[in-house]
Structures are given as C-alpha cells and as structure tokens.
Length: 214
Length: 139
Image 1: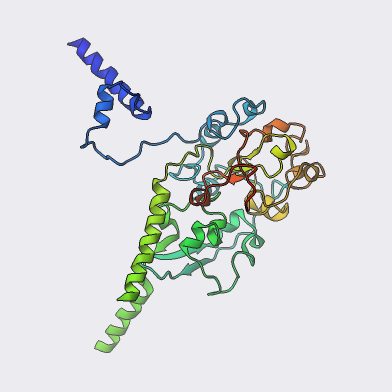
Image 2: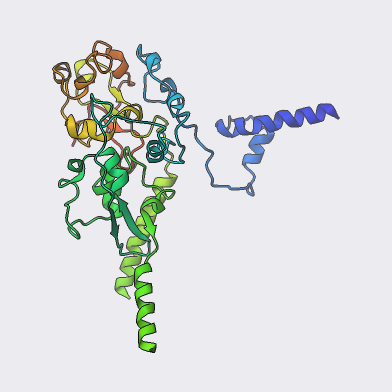
C-alpha cells in the first residue's frame, strides 16, 4: 500500500516536469497520456514561463562571455520591490511611491527632487471602453516635461490624435509603454481606461430630467 | 448599417491584433525593456551590447539619461560609439570610473550572443514586426 502511495507521489511530482518537456517520441508516460486527454482542464492555457531569469540563462547574454558572471540576476534586485504581473513583474510606480527604490533625479546630486506636476488629463474615447485618465503626477516623477512635449504630445487640448493602433506600433504612449514602461496587454487596459463612461453626462442628464419634471 | 459594419470590422481587427499579441509564443525570456545594441558592435569585432533598463531605473529616473544626457527613445537611435563614450558623452557620463565602473570592462556591456539584431527585448513592436537579423540592412 505504501509503495503505491509513493509511486503516486512520484508521478504527481513528475507531471509538471513532463508538461514542460517536449513529448519525446515513443515514450508514453502517464503524464503524456494526460496531456493528450481531449477533456483536460484549461486546454488552451499555456504553462507559465519562468520570469526574471539570471543573465546566463536568458537566451540573450552569451553564457560563455567573460562579463556575464559580473551581471546581477534580476530576481536578486527585484526581491523587495512591489510585484506586478506584466513586464519585469515589478510595479515600478508603486515601488517608487512606497520608497522601495529611490532613483536619482540628477546624475550627480542624490538629493535633487523631481519637479512633480499633479494634473490629470481625461480623454473621452470613442469606442465602448472607459475614458482614459492620464496622470501627470506619476509620469513627472520619472520624466522631464521635454521628454514628451512638444515632440510626442502637443501641449494643447484636443491637438493629439491617439489610437491604440498607433500605441501598439510604438508611437504616442507607445514610445515608452510596450517597450520599457508597463506593456499594453489585456491585463493592463484598465490602468489607463479607468474612468467609467458618461459618468458626468449621466448626472447632467438626471439633473435635466429632474428640472423638466418640476 | 454599413458604417456600423465597418466599425465592427475595425474593432474585430484590433481584437485579433491584441489576441495574436497575447497568444504569440514569446521566446523573449530576458528582462522586459532590455536593449540589444548592435548597430556597430559586431561590425567592429565586438559582441552586441545588452543594456539592462531595469538595473538603471532602480538607480536613476528616466529623465537623467533621456533628457539630460540626450539618449533618444529609440534603440540604436542615439548614434553612440566608443569614442563618444570615452569623451564622456552618453554612457560615458557615468561609466567613467567616477559614478560607475569605467569603459575598460568591455565584456560587461558587450555580453550578447553573436548575431543578435538591435531591439528592445519583449517590446510590443518587436512582436508585431520582429527585428531583422544583424547585418541584414533593409531599413
């Protein structure tokens, strides 16, 4: 009885390992049979890929290179930072807000303070998605006005045509978002599209009807 | 009716685009936002440079490099070469043995696998239009 239990335990341990390996021809394990089961749970869900790999294993650094050993593994640096589920798997804005990191605002002076501007820009979007609220505050913590204005965004209301297609192609917000700042994925839509549509309008309409009733 | 149809088709197209982005098996397991820079490196006989954005943004805000030091928001778009770095421009503004380790540590930056094209690792654009292999000059 104990042997059977142990065997079951070993199989249970092997299942995730086998799922990660390409199925070797001819070798039919219980796990492989399970993978071919047409009624598996979450059939199309891909197994999670490892993240924040050390440089020598990331597929870009040359593991034979002499300098690679000196490079810091990202996991070590990210240990105490606020986590997220996209990009570097680090929430950089929250990590800064909570003081987990304190990046310099000046190359030399560690005490230089950023010139923060607290101004939200609401963009009413055409489709069914909630309106976009753009916060200057979080952006000016990192950037200088001249980084965006006037080359990327004309500092004038209504002067900037922005579309998701342009952003995905690396223009407008996509100059940073989708490259270094948090990426544009289905997990991040609501980070920008955050204001329910017609909130103001509905209120105004309600007031109007109330007024006509009187 | 026709208009609604067209609108629907456009939304459909966008959804497919986003869908492919999400489903596309992403081989990039290196850090999101890291740059491969190989405009000159391999032509000059050195391995490509890998620039870790994450490491630098822990220490500096974007503005320090992208406003004060003149780095463009485009991989390979700043026209950097070793002479400029030695003269204290771009990377050389810090990598001078004063603020950060100096340029004689060639292999810490020039640490990429041979043949990698200039790119932003894990970028949306890289998934939509994958970079051409290094040396393939068709821009």
